[in-house]
Length: 608
Image (cartoon, rainbow, N blue to C red; front, side, top):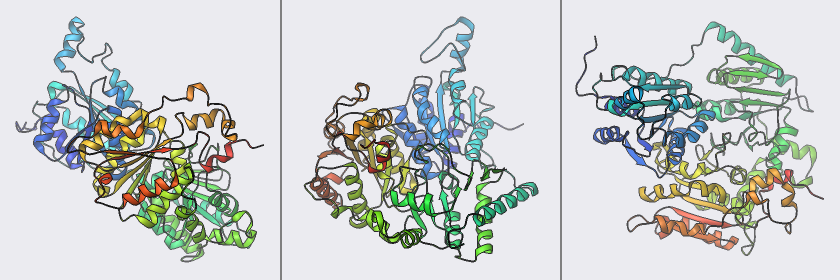
C-alpha cells in the first residue's frame, strides 16, 4: 500500500506535474473553486499565474503558448468559466494542440447535498456531468477527480494522453480536494508513442515505393522528375522541422508549405518556393505548384478549405501523408507515421536520384519554358525579391490597401528591423494578406482550420510568454470585427508589460470576409451600395482603446494610419528602442477603403 505523504496535496501534485512538463505560465480566470490551487501554485513558484479578462482569451493564450512550447495549460471555474473556454479548447482539438484544461468544480459536499435534497449552489447544473460531457467532445481524455486517492492516477493518465495524442485533455477537480493529501509524483509523465513493428515496416516500405512510382510516372517534358513537397501542420505539431529540412537539403526537392505550416522551417532555404493556398496563392506560387510541378507530395498537410483555398479535393497526382496514414493517388497505406516516413522517403529519393538529384528552381524552369509573359519571375530569387520590395512599390501619398500594408511590412521585416518578430495572424483577410510575408522558422502563428475570429489577440499573450520566443515581439494582424470579439485581451498585454504591435485592419466597420463569401460582387464596384446589413459593425475609435488600459507604470499606445507615408513613419519608429511607442503594447488602426480586399481573393470577385 502506498504511503500518503502529508506534505503533498492534490493541488501540489498537479502543480508539480505541470512544472515537470516545462509549463512556465498558467492562463485563466479565477473563481472560488480554483483559489486553493492557485495559492499552491504561487507557493511552489515554478509556474506564473496569468489572469486574463476572459476565459476565451486565456484559452487562446494557452493555445499559442502550446504551439510554440509543445504543451500549454489553462484553468477556469465550473460551468460559467468552462463553457466560455470551450471554443478555444475546440480549436486546439481540431488543430492538434496539446492543451491541459483545468476546471475547478463545486466541492464534493455540495454535490452530495444536491443528490440528497436537490440544492443547487453557484455554477451547478442539475446535470452533474454537463461539463464533462461537453468536454469529452473536444478532448482525447476527460477526467472528473472526486477522490484524492485516485487523483494521481487520473492526472497522470490525462497528461500522458495529452502528450501522446498531442491534443487537449480535461481535468475537472472538486474544490475540497485541492488540499487533500495524496502521494508524491513518482515516475515522470512521458508520451507513449505507437510501437513500430515489422508490420509497420512493411507498410512503410510499400508507401515509400508507391511515392517513388508516382514520381516516376509523372515526369516533366524533358523526362526528368518534377515533384514538389507540400509541408503541412503536422511538421510543426510533431516537431519534425529538422527532418523536413534534412529531406529537402539531401534531395534538393522544391517545397511549399500550407498556410498553417508557414515558417515551420526557415523560408530562406533555397528549396522554399512559397505558400500554396489553392486559388488564393500568389499567382507565381500557384503557377509552379499546380502547373509546372507534375506531382505533389503532401507531408503533414491537412486537406482543409483554407489550405486548399476553397478547393474540395486533391487529385490523383498527389501524395497526402497525414493523420497517421499515407494516400498515394488512389491507394492508401494506414498506420504509417510521419516521423518514420520522412527519413525513409529521404533515403529512397537519394538512392533513386542521387544526393541533390531533385534540385531545381521551378520559377527559372517555368520562365525558360513559357517566357516572360504575365510578369513571370525569371527565377526564385526574383520572386522573393518582388515580395520584399514593398517599401518602394507604392507612393507615400497613396491611401493604404491590404496589399500595400503587407508589402511594406514585409520590407520592414526583411530589411529594416533589428528585432525578432512573431507574426500572429487572425482569420479572413488578415490571414490571406500575411501568408506571403517572408519569415524565419517559428515566426508565424495562425489558426487556419477552426478559424475563430479574434483568436490572434489572446494568442499574442501566449506567443510573447513562450520560452522559445520570449525575445520575439508579437506582430498581430486582425480584422476590426474580429478585434471587437477579443479587444479586452489588450489589457493583459498592458498589465504584463508585453510589447505586441496589433494592426487592426479597419475596412469601414463591416465583416469583409463574410461579405466576400456571401456577395463578392460588392467588391467589383467601388461605388456599390453598402454591404449586407448583417455584416455591418458599430464603428469604434480603435486607436483610443489603449488609453483605457494604460496606467502610470503600464504604458499602452494607439495610433491611426491612413496613407503609406504614415505607415512608413510608424515602421521607422518601431526600429527605435527609445521611442515611447515601443514601451508597451501598440494598437495601430489601419484605415482602409470599404471596397478593398487582398489581391489573393481576386479569384472570387466577378469582373465584367
